[in-house]
Image (tube, rainbow, N blue to C red):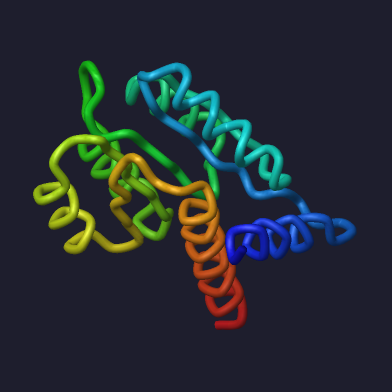
Length: 150
């Protein structure tokens, strides 16, 4: 039942008047997974950009800074971890959720050592991902507010 509560809280927060919806970039070479994640996030009021690989993701973030990135780790060409390093070079505070269906030991250790990065093992529950999304976005909003007051 808590999954419904998480979904409802997220939805209510995004429906406040004059609130610009956060932009989330979803990067995954598996089209059905990417589309499913995008739809899940869109139902919660988020604006979603999609990229099938890290190269396309780099192009998108070159034109628009997302508020959060959700990226698969294992993709043809550049991995999600390499993409995370690239993003950290531009915006170290930008939160990234790395996802993978493969062995979690290496990626989990990388995420634990990397600021604003979380690893989620596939398969995962929708409410688990939505809770992480909201946690990362809330933390980013808090940092912006604190930096804005300084």
